[in-house]
Length: 408
Image 1 (cartoon, rainbow, N blue to C red):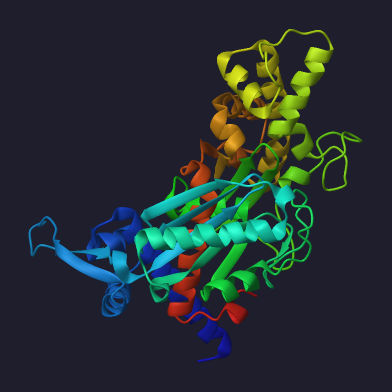
Image 2 (image 1 turned 90 degrees about the horizontal axis):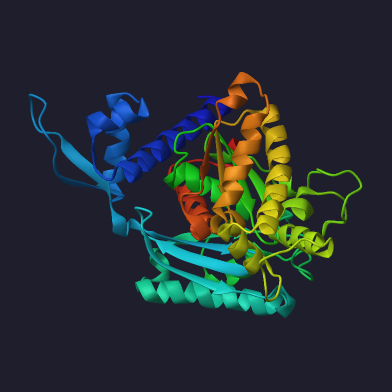
C-alpha cells in the first residue's frame, strides 16, 4: 500500500468511526442495521467498527429491539463511563465551563463573570478554579478525562496554541494558552475560536447535525464573531483567523473599532452599538422609557417592552448584521445559519429583525435555501463546542489518524 493510500485509508476509518459514534450519540440506542441505514455504510463496515468499539468498551450492548420478522436486533449505546470531556469558553465578560460524559451529557456546568481589567493572570487563575470545580462536582479522576477543549477569542495561532492579541483583552499578547493549561492540568488541551466552537457544537450535538456547510454568527455585548464548519471540520487557518465577520466593513470611514480599523460590523451592531444609538436618539430630543442609567441591560429590557427608541436601536443593529450575513450567504451558500450570543439570547427581536432583512434580499438559489435558527445551547454553546473538540481529537488519536499528514 502506498503512503497516499495508507493516509486515506486511515482517514476514512476515522471519519467512519466518528460518524458511527456521533450517530449513536444522537440516537441514544440503535441496532447495527439501523446504524447502517443512518450512516450509509455497509453492514460489513458497521460490523467491523462496532466490534472494535465494543472491544475497547466505548460501546455497550443494551438488550434487544423490536423484531421485523426474524431475530430481535441487539441495541447499542455509548458507554457513558468510557471517558469525560471538559469544555471551557472564555468570553470578554464571562467564562463558562462544562463537563460531560462519553455520551456528551453535560453532568455539571459553571459560569462566572469576569472583568478583563483584572488582567491575564487573574483571569487564567479563575479559569483553573472553574475547571477544578466541575471536576470535583462530578468526582472523576484526571486519568478518566479525555481532555480539555478551550474556546477562546482570536486572533490566535491555533497550531501553536497561542492567543496573539485579542482586541477586547488588553495585555493578552502572545499568550501560550494551550501550554499553560496542559502544564497545570496534566491533560491534553485542544483549542479553537469561541465562535467556531459554538458552531461545532451544533454540528456534533445540535440542530445542524449532518449539514455540510454551517455558518455561525455570535452576537454579544462586546464582540461579534463568525465561523464556518465544513463537513464537520472548522474552516480555520492554523496560524491565523478565518471568517472574522465582526471585522468586515459595513460603513466606510465609520466609527473606530477596537481592532484599529473603521466601520467594522462589531462597532455598528454589538450590544454597545445599541446603547450608542439610544444615546444619539436621546441627544436629538427623542423620548426614551429608560429612567435610570442607560446601559446594555436597560436598552434590551426596554426594547423587549416595546419602547420605540430602544426598538429602533435594535433594528439598526439587525440591519448591519443582515448586510454582513447577506454577503457571506452570496459567497458561500451555507446550508444552515446559526445565531447565538448573549445579545440575541436576551433580545429575541434582534433575531426576528435580522431574518426579516435577510429575506428581503435576492440571493442565488442555493443561498436562499439556507435554514436559519438560534443556537441549541445558549450560553453553553462555546463550552459544549469545547467538548466536541475533545471528542473529535479523541476519535483521531484512537483510530489511527496522523494529524500531521491528514490535515494538510
